[in-house]
Length: 247
Length: 259
Image (cartoon, rainbow over all chains, first blue to last red; front, side, top):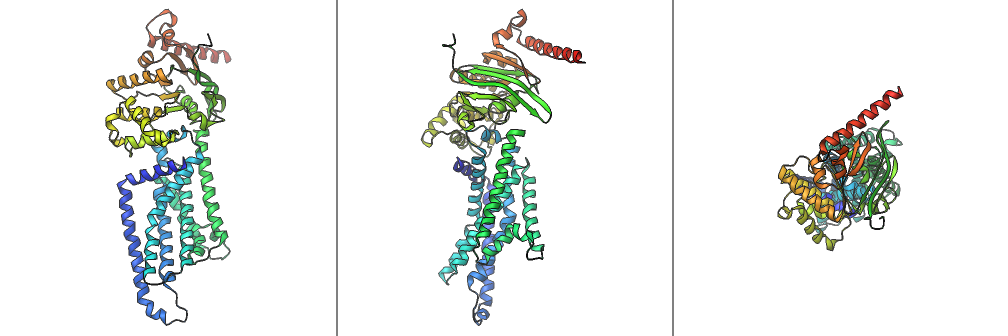
């Protein structure tokens, strides 16, 4: 059932021409960022070569690229998650799911996984571009892997938050604005907090991604993302259940 | 007598429901037997749709029990809902999908195995008159066809209980005739509860009638009995109005006495 709901989300997304247009435009943007980073690296490479311990292409091209993708995903995810439940409410299609033999858990997890698969597919070209560098040089696979895991966990946390806010309203635009405000708010609070022990650093997904971006696999960061996503998924399940209680 | 009575497919006992401090549904009890079409009649705001939402698990009652084919809907919702098909007042259609894709999703959602989906789809489309539009996007269909798609999703898994909330509202006379023929056919195989305020619909489709007013069931009998109510046969509309007005007058007298 979870797979069925996830597949329907994907099917609905890909029946919209706008999805294909945005998909294509984003691939162009990703490629442009990649080539810009690569060109900058090639320009400074002679100077870097004179250093005793020069940074490699993974640190100078891949890591900043992942950082950019993380910021782009923060702005993109609410545009896609806004539809997940708010549109079901607006179009009055929720009774189809609520009267079917499945639980709120199936509905929420199906929608979450469908959206996560879509966002992973959307950004899948980035690691492919970066791994193409392996044809001409050697890559730091540890740093690449840390970034890939971090990006996946970050995307999951953005999706879970967006899904929850989508469950709070019947207006997809309000859901998008709400999710974007929450994500940007957490990010700004993180970069604006000057004290190193500020709690804002601890609860900001983008702040937590920095360790992954630097190649550091910290279990507390991974646990944060799992908890962050889990809490918002549980809140979404609770919200859908309240739909049956309060109407 | 009871040995030969058809099996009870839906039983609701003493359903109550409040929204905020206001009690909307008061002790509603219903039973439905196999092969029966039950008409839920009432003015706008009588509580028909709320009752139907409770019968289909979309809304939880504050108190009371619901059994679908002997399975408790509140304790075992997933099991009970397998025997249920529901068409809400607004058909729950994913308008960006084509009819076949939508019905395939609805069939899989109701637990039909992959190998049996094609046969279930063919049967539902044939019964709903959708054979010619399987490949069409739902948003491009007329309102009548969209309503048929809504009914097809409710019957694609051959449920024992079909709940239809105002299935002919907004349709033209030809579409109404077709949908009524389909509901009659459904009533031969399963049990159907249908909410409406069209008395002609009740007369032509329903074996039994329950009249709701202000969240209460105020009358329940066969369609023929309603038609002959008060010794005036064949005047369904007048009899319906007499029953609801009598109830309003009784409620006013009680309120007056209370003062």
